[in-house]
Image: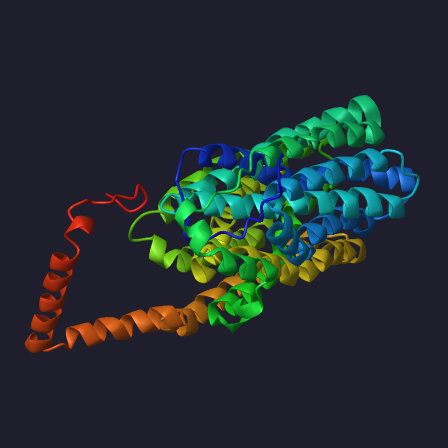
Length: 473
């Protein structure tokens, strides 16, 4: 592994938009698949856990909720670890934690122990893999970033299609304990993905000249200046409201079908349908978001995706048979895929590359509380009413509300802000341009005389064109 390299994203490095970036994309695809599909796939074991420990729906829903809460709530910790040690070491340690949590969970004798192992330890391990992989992906891609984000996000539905039926088979053949043990072994593949995250090296010239500046930057492990950005605050607020209801339908749709007296395998097949549609929705949405006209307006496309998702939840609340649940999963897969492909692309567009590692950690922390109370509160509502209709209605209202917050906030705040200089450096550059435009012809003559004199004084230094592979066309 070599020396620890801090992945602080030096500004002198240009995103290659390919090359080793495709290997990074592959690793990010697998990590995203495990991170997002695992909390949903674990729901296949809920019925067995209810019989084993004599608990209710809300108690088992805490497993998925804790997994997601750890994935989100440890965001700042992941940001600090990445800025201090680099993406690769953090992901290797995270892979070991994720695997160890599921292996220990297979020997648990109470639901509390499962919360601590499969929930906390495995969730922490997935978090230490998920966030660094996104940071590396956004450093390796610039022009192709929307497509790269869409392709990596497709890992979630691909793994959901695979893990859901696999979990059903493992439960039938080996029980939930054997299933947890085998899934724990599969999570060791996160370590392999972590080994692919090779840090980008800055140009050799900048290493000598900017060494003091780089050392100073490394001390800043978490950048809180993103809170000065109105766009970041609006995005964080909208995302926090969104995740209250976004993950509820996939967690409960299998139990919904089982309560309608459909076989377990048929009920689990609903997640496969949802995931299969999601597989195509994410890359296609990433391609659309990368179009020249659409990319500057990605925020509005993201808002539409959330409204579409919320409306699908409201319509899904009226399902009374298996056919209705299939239709719901098809449309939910489309809208959910759009949200998954755009959420981090929009954040990247708002805060930029340099602040993304800190911004994503703070956003995930803000979303953690919402993720923690979302599915369990829905489970409490289900235990009280025994009707899934109310669960889906509440989820739809929450996601739709978040879309309105983002769209209206963007229209009144972010759009106006983008018309002004984002940084002091940009403002200074604009002032210099204005001064140069206001120069009189006499000033221009003086400048040309100085240039000619410089060329005469140092002829040996001129006539040789120095090209830089990063700047030449």
